[in-house]
Image 1 (tube, each protein chain N blue to C red):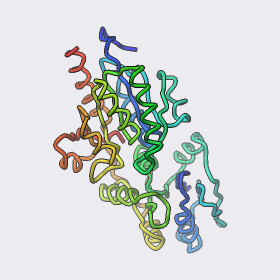
Image 2: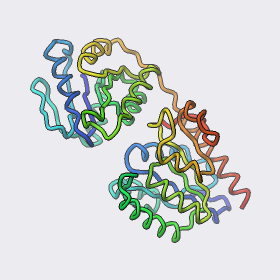
Image 3: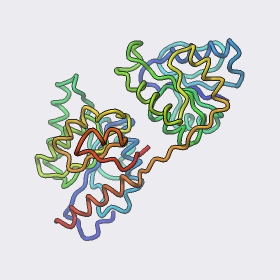
Image 4: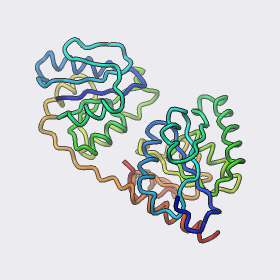
Length: 162
Length: 160
């Protein structure tokens, strides 16, 4: 199953159109579950809902073999944690999909690190979607404990000074 | 709550709703070793506050950004009231702008500020992070490339 998700704060129908076009071209044969957000477009060739509650969302994410999504940090970090192959398409300011282009930066960065595949337009998505099946993401090593340790030492100094 | 004989130090943890809050919660998952735990929390939306309430008292200061000076003023007023009432000794935050305003005021009232710039900023510090450069006592970024650009910023790892 492929889980398609675009977040819920801004419309992002461009990705839904692209996924639908990929299905019509026979590039996607797997079942699709989609959370399409507030853009208003409802795809004809797969089932979609506007938004999922947290529990449903997590369940879809866990069940999915692959993820196709906007380049949101929350989605990407979840894919990294669950080791799911993910293809992201960044939202762009010029299409009014976001207030700035920081998703472009996110997509480029995480693509360069090997954590995600990225597609920058519909044609690009047609190419990358076929690579998704064999894509093995580089495991992300985040170190929240290192930051917590750093804060710990800072607080310890404060306590000692007191 | 572990206070280990330093009850007089009051810690505050805060983050804007959304990704910033996810990062703060990730940090707090590893906070059990700290000598003090947050005595209260600050966020920007009521919906998020409800999730935090099991941890301790939560204050909501509202959303604002540089395009909405009027909202920023409201956030400042709310923040000022909270800072005066709670008098935190230290504030730890993962951003964004409303929390920078809160931290700035807390600093004026004698608190130390730990600013962790959001992971979303990969090339340079966020706008609010650059504001925090002026008053943060510890400033962490989650990308080595960003740390290289600022003397004050330090990189030790990423939260996500």
